[in-house]
Image (cartoon, rainbow, N blue to C red; front, side, top):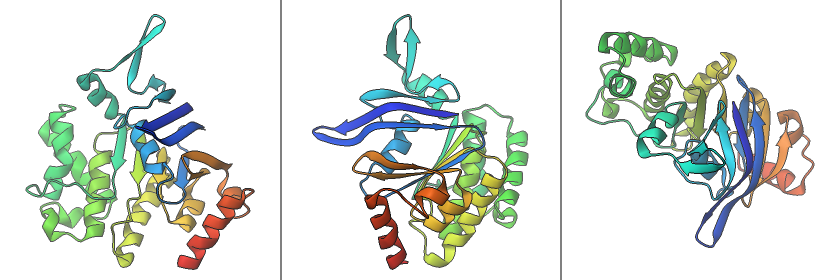
Length: 253
């Protein structure tokens, strides 16, 4: 489902990703952990072609991200082609990015109706099913300002799922939430993982990462320092940088 080979990314003289290599199969969950500025969110954005990589290649479900091959050469996709490709990934950001003038239901059906050309009646039926799945059936006609932060983030997850993505990307989805609201979003993500949704999750919730992940990558300084099963990376890490990070996180908890 996801293959990254020798991926690099720079902003001017600042290199933020260096030789990133990983593979994720369908229905698996990968968590990216590490200190702020380590490149986790940038890599997530590269997967969804929101950022352009300078080196290496990324494939999602067999399709090369951001480029097409013509003979022996590669050409950047057009904006229209990029938009089509991005639809294969659902992305949930730190901020909810809901349309404030639309209800929860309207936020969810907007992209399916206008991008995927799903009939409005069908989109509404599917949206109500997604709201039920995230525990918000009673909030369909509520506007974002009438919802808590946790409820808004659950609507954002439902909105991403409405496009029927092959891969779900989560960029620290609980970091902007009050502590008492974190659990309700994590519960939705647990259900997605249990249902076999392929996911890449950037998170600082280490216990959550240990619980839901098939693999964990610890990143620091733009590189993957350590990669493996949660029981190894988060419980018995081999690298000193990983051990120091986990110790700091436990001390701060």
